[in-house]
Image 1 (tube, rainbow, N blue to C red):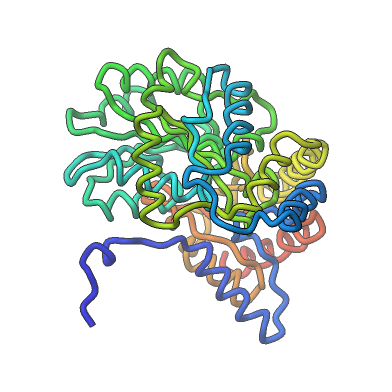
Image 2 (cartoon, helix red, strand yellow):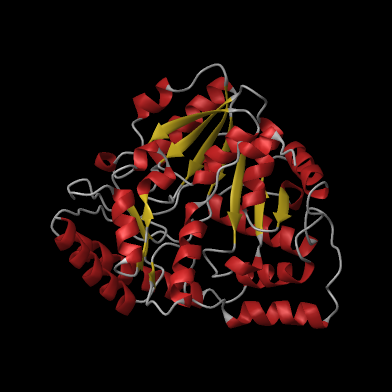
Length: 388
């Protein structure tokens, strides 16, 4: 069987590969603590589930418009306008099955072969995968620990060329938990406006930020005209299995993204979109409670990691990931991650899964109970004693 060359250029997301290994070990009776997958351990709030059930009972089980149910598009437009301080119309919104399609469609719609795309490194691995898929040129901009996993402005600007067509932002970030300040965003905005470059702003962790205010590049100058906001429901509302996300962009690009959607998956599931409306406009107390729980867990995992000799960890400002430095251990991060899973029953990811600048780190998701995080820390400390 002949496989198209373009498929060979696709990468993967190692979290799912490690999850599969961990589940296999569990099936054999092993006790595994899951710190590998970026998935809230909370159930979807009841009011959201009830809204979707009502939609099912009302017969909302067929196709809907390709760009989404109008009521949800209006709710997204209101939410985006309110939280970013800009004026958004429903025609600028495209609802998708999960947020990843917005990533894929934006790159397909804006990047030609040979065009350069700047993306955060360490960063979500699918960015680089999709850039390679369309034969763009991946240009990583480093996020360094000494800058709390932000970028150096001079270094960032030096990477921009006349071939740069798209800049990808992610704040709060996966895997580091770092955030971009308004000053950082102004650096990007100035370059984008001067060079006429599009921006894909991945804001999926927007509500999961602890000690600072969230800033979107779309609130700077006319950046909404040249920015695609990627957002969704999976992380904030514990709706990973619902596969519901959205993009917000200028109307011209929205029409092109809609074409890509109709050529691929037709539309997002009808009834889940009514759950999305309730998520945005219903009771937000469960979301505040989840954030408070994540903040408490952050303290436990960061303090616990820093108490282990040979490991240091910067406190993440958002999302639910710790990104500890393990370069002082007498074992490679990848081998240490394998040891933790296979011998100690703790599933984590090697930082190199997120790009070259992630080498020397591990990613731990603290979307797990404090009890399990405590057990995991004890096992990690035992593993460190073994290798050192």
